[in-house]
Length: 284
Image (cartoon, rainbow, N blue to C red; front, side):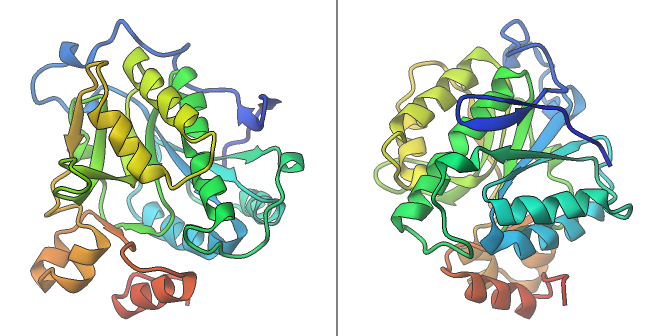
């Protein structure tokens, strides 16, 4: 288990980066050989945010992730409340974690967040999801290439071969929505550290200073960007939405899914029960 050295940022406690010294403007996406995967040319950092209400989903995610044997990749977990921070610190002390695992945590003195799962679209929920670009931005500025993942996901196989040369590679939430196509999901994406992506995340962070659901705002910024961001959708046949996987996919199509996202359903209990029904819950 990897330890962590930390220092205080303005609002967040961050780790010292084990990445490049800042964004790599000189390493452009276009400089990569055609067809080469970023997984072949970069060292990824997987980034997750965890709160007390979904700690069990994080453990479920971790159990499936361990089976992929991606030991060359560091997992950075951001604890979003004191309760889950204590749980994660206990987890770090165990010898059977089996994953290079680091812990960041927010400055809780600035929070007034209730324990347990938050209600979707509530003001507290919006505050929590509005902090996502801040966490990602700090890592990009440290020179880390990031794979961000929600914890209500199961990684059935490694997504690395699908992270092709692009500034950002994302799940598709819908073909077209609110006049934008594709309409991306902010629950899973890879993003390379460069000046273009730092600007994108900075704009996203600024737009969420008044907390709101982060996904519609992200899509508006990305599709309206003039910064030359190279964004690529993941194939929906291998990275289906929860609506597609759980209600439309055939058994063969489900077997071919790389990542399963338990979205298009609201509530901790409903998500957990659906995972159980599809043999994607590992804790009981």
